[in-house]
Length: 259
Image (cartoon, rainbow, N blue to C red; front, side, top):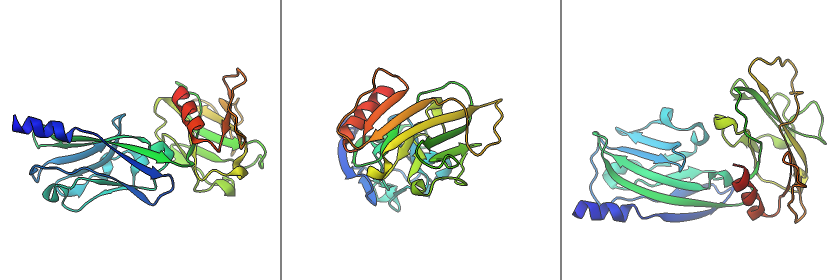
């Protein structure tokens, strides 16, 4: 009964707020009871992505989701110190989620479980692209007013291709889901400013198609207009979205509808 009461206390949630672009953020999790040294520490998102895994005195990066590689760390000897807190580096708006710290015994029994809600405020703007069911070989994002031989982002054969990426977007863009789970091709644009105002187009190439050019010439899957005005509307066109880059809440509303 005493252990059950302790578990209920550890299950209580906690909310952390941070500005996008901060160097790091700490997701706290401390145990009030002694934990076995052979236990497994597993941090996950609400969608069950593995954020950080610690087992037998080592971080298990091979089990970690790609989106969190080289971005997380926990304290030294977390089981001994009972401090299982996770540090997430370079938080973005897309990192906004509920993170769960789970500690399991060698036999698989849950010894501790705690939720931490992360709220990120800032300018990590997701450019949303509709979902598709085909196997995707390449994804390209362009901006229509820039050099047509360049692109904002291109992924081919599971890897980003920076060869002809426009200089203004280097180190500022990444796929929301690098694994393209469920065909989600949404792109995250960081450090948004008035210079990013324009029309963005998402295209893709599926298995079986031939593509030798540097850019993809298929029909657009999604067209997004990024504006600096205080306005958001869709003109009753499901393929064209108008996004205000100055108002984070409007972006979040749009994201909730289409993801």
